[in-house]
Image 1 (cartoon, rainbow, N blue to C red):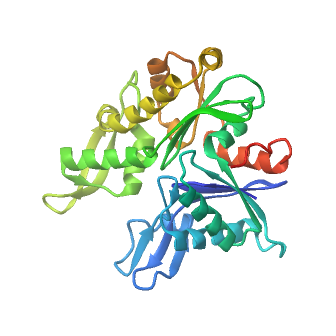
Image 2 (tube, rainbow, N blue to C red):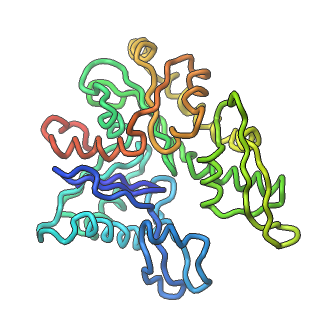
Length: 327
């Protein structure tokens, strides 16, 4: 079983079946005893709509486990759901982790998976899994650069001969873009919106690069001054300005990694270009902005949202070929 344990979504791939689970990494618990009320998609539908007796928890923050107990509960729920009650043998699990993860954070991931029912836990760096999932030739002595913009982290890595030659990880990604939209609406329009609304605005009219025809949408929230519901019209130009800071940080992480790349591999990257994946890669204009700032061809992976778990699944399907990949 391969797991992409993401800040925003968790995906599970099982051998012979492909991706069997794709659900939000959210848990709803009671305020008093922290008893689990709902997990995954069911929990996501309740975010921002719960009474004071129950609360929303995201067990992962910035790509790593923030709440050990609830991460374990969430993993157990997802593993059981993916297995659908089949077999009594504990599964062998490969989990993706950020390249900048510490030893303590690695142990937290391993322990959570073992307590959730894993027989053996293998760890794979997210950029490596993404490269395998997007069919980059990682076994050859050529330079390949992959940019994974997730919910909690942005991972940039130059890969050659089954190894990461240069890499950088920043804990600025999709969640920080949502937060920037939320803060902009508060400051500019005294409008308070929920985290799901901020995410929808990003998806609908968010852009990293100017559009030929700017768009606008109506946003519903609460007026911070009057305290009553309010509707506000916002343009894609405004949202682009609002998210400029986190987007610039992501671009700078890519540029910093390119500066660390050996010249021979840099020559390969000029020919091969950059592959971007993860939910943040789907932000409109992100590829054009990166191309403009790096002077390199940039393409969005076809399977941008699933390439990490698919890459991890391939490693599990052929462990001998990818023996050097595991951390």
